[in-house]
Length: 104
Image (cartoon, rainbow, N blue to C red):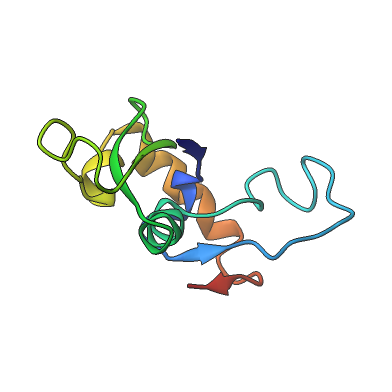
């Protein structure tokens, strides 16, 4: 399973609250979705493990537990968001860091 997350949120375990009237870009173009940390926690709870991501780390890849652990072991969120581009992306969070989030 592949889930898009927001590397702008860094290692914060946060989710933007659901808004039934949301239309992109909303209040801010980066104020939507969930952090890689929050999504990895949900995946683990549902029986999946993080096994990788695209080059920039925002498309996270999960495999159902009990399937191919010897071939695709779990990786850390930290390891998938190391791309130098993400340092600049995480600075975008400063403008919205005080907004409302669900901390998970």
